Length: 120
Image 1: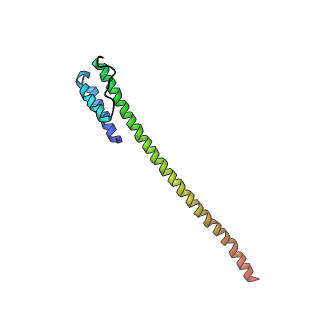
Image 2: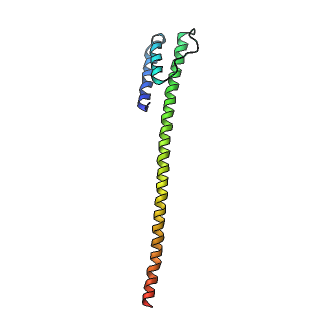
Image 3: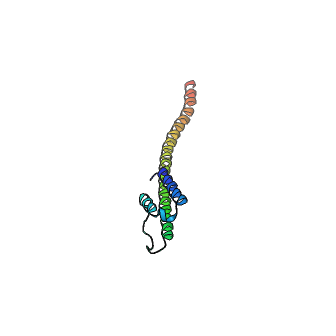
């Protein structure tokens, strides 16, 4: 589930719970719970409808929170992979730059020595 979908489901839940009485939204909450992968089981069918409705709302919130955490972990993993690859590339570049610096240093010492040897 994408972040956009999660936010859309949150908005849908907010609209349902804000505008409708609990006895009218119970079946809509069950449908929404199924859509987001939340548990539709309630502790007891004999409890008051408002208690079961509250439990469904809690389950939906928890499912959306879990989906958000999954997305955040996925993004963190991608960031780690990018950072690791960049670090490996930087190490390769370091060795290339180091080799060039050593060659340049050797050339800087060899050139004057050759000039001295030619004049001798």
